[in-house]
Amino acid sequence: MKQNGFTLVELLVAVFIFSVLVVLAGGSFIGAMAAQRRALNIKKAEENGKFILELMAREIRVANPINTGNSACLGTTILNFLHPVNGTVEYFLSGNQIHRRVNGVDTVVSNPDVDVSRLNFCISGNQSGDDRQPLVTVILGLNAVGAPQNDVFDLQTTVSQRVLSD
Image 1: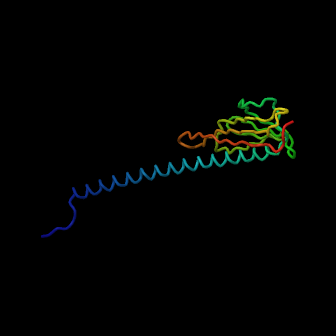
Image 2: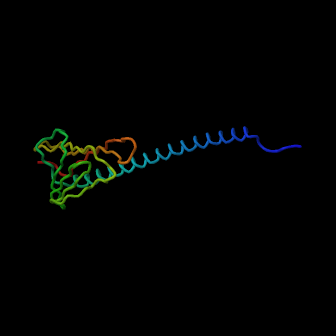
Image 3: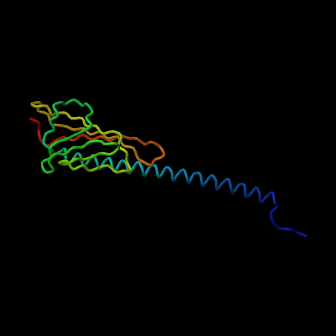
C-alpha cells in the first residue's frame, strides 16, 4: 500500500520555517511603519517652522526700523516692532509655543504638535547713522512631538527691512 502525505517531522519543519519568515517580515514592516511615522512628524515640524518664519518675515520686512539700540547678536528672545497696518507686534517664546501679540491680543502661532525649543533674534544694521540695511535673523529650534526619538533641528532665516534706519 502506498501512502501519500507528510510526516509529522516534515510538517513541524515547514511550520517552523513559515513562522520564522512571518516574524522577519512583520519586524521589517513594523520598522518601516515607525520610520514613516518619524518622517511624517519631522515633515510636520519643518512645515510649521517654515510657516512661522514666513509669517514673521512678512511682517518684519515692512515694519518700521527696529531700533533696539544694540546691533550685536545677543540672542534676543523677544522681538517687538511697529507694523504699518497691524500696530505694535511682538513675537516671543512661552513654554514650547511661539506667541504673537498684536496690540495686546496674544495668539499662539506654532502648532501644538511641535515643541519650539529655541527662538532667537539677531538684529544688525539698526544703529543710527550706520547707513546699513537693517537685518533681522530669526533662529528657530524645533522638535516633533510624538516622535520616538528627539528629532531636534534648527531653521534660520534673515530678513532685510525695506526701510533704512536713521
